[in-house]
Image (cartoon, rainbow, N blue to C red; front, side):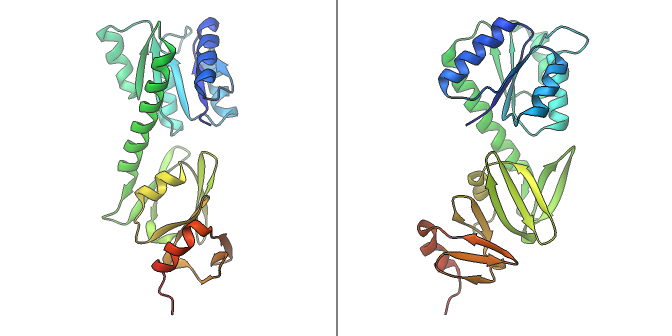
Length: 236
């Protein structure tokens, strides 16, 4: 379930947003009413998308908070505000938001705005992070993007809203879905063998009716993927 974080200095707005979001089907672990509360919210919960009021009072604004997200987290964000004038919008655009909601908003607009923001964000990340020409992939780690050789990847394991990207000497935790990884990695090299696993076919050391082994890792193979996997392997 997608976790939505809220930062707005009006408690009633936070409560209303939280109520609407839960009714639509999102998870709202908590909301924040100050910049500092927002930092704690991001720290304590694996937020998938953030809704931010532009004017939150205090020395720092929602736009400042958006810039903090951009520097430290790989998640989409949506501004919510009662202001829709050109000056406010132009200022907000410096943080490259993935959506904009004008108060007063209606519940019906929330779903379409959030889903569009998430899908567009995933598409932009995928297009910028995978370079098939150079056979490399860039993944966000802390405050930097780390370059990996695609052929060095042994397998990818799904865990909630994250994936573990495993090489022979290291594991990288990256916020993404297995489906998105499958769509953006070379399909002649990587194949999904289980709802939670993608493997580099060229790295498979052995295979049985129930699993494949890569180095010391044993990866289960689901029946629904087995037949297609057999076709990819040069079995005698």
